[in-house]
Image 1 (tube, rainbow, N blue to C red):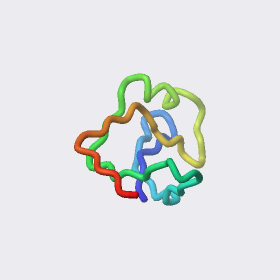
Image 2: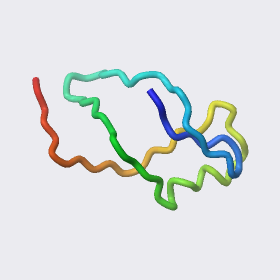
Image 3: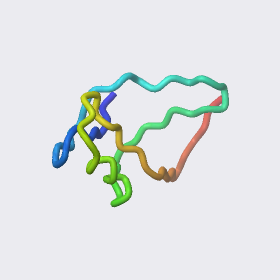
Image 4: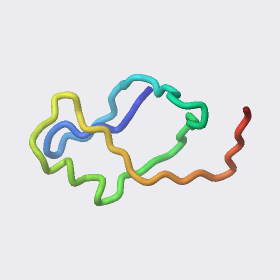
Length: 69
């Protein structure tokens, strides 16, 4: 899967990362069709470089969600 990653100051990219896994039967995996980063999501961008890249994660919202057991 692809994820937004922060590598160094002013180096924001999209990287291949491992697919998510379900660890508990109540955890869903959802498809994200659009996303954004809020200002607070960029704070790690001002820290020292991370060779793995920091994965940007912020608030999530779902609309028209359908769950099938």
